[in-house]
Image (cartoon, rainbow, N blue to C red; front, side):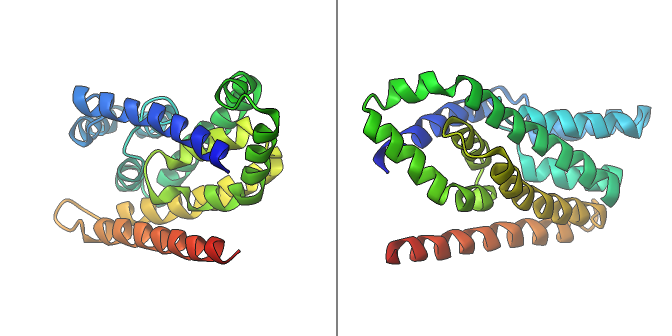
Length: 216
């Protein structure tokens, strides 16, 4: 289990560093993203669809405000297209993270955990708890990308990963984009309530999972 935690921490630090770079440079600030969307709206709504998808895909490499982008997608594109663009971007990020670490992760795993028995223990631990980890990962920034990479590096069966990622992503995107679609500048309360509710439910899920694991 310690080996699994060690790998997760390394991935988290890598993604956290991109988050701080993004914050310091302001490249993906909420104000800047809003400006991009306003500009794209004047040209073609399809451009906003593409921007949302690419921004959420880029979350695999540079941390972006996923929830805010998804809410804005609903606001600018409406519920059906906003949710579709968000789901597509999140799936591209998750599947790419899984495939990249599945293909190249052995070197990282062997370097971080040199003992073969400990490597096997780390893999078995993720196969045991990884599904639930992916399900709850939207509770915090960075965790979704970490969990996708952990699934790839430990070679979780792709179908199992895809099922967990679907349950993790689709409701999140639907709720966030819908709240954006019924919000406005003068009445942002639906989006605010949705954001609070999503994180509250996910954190309660983490708490229940922690209690369950402590009893096992």
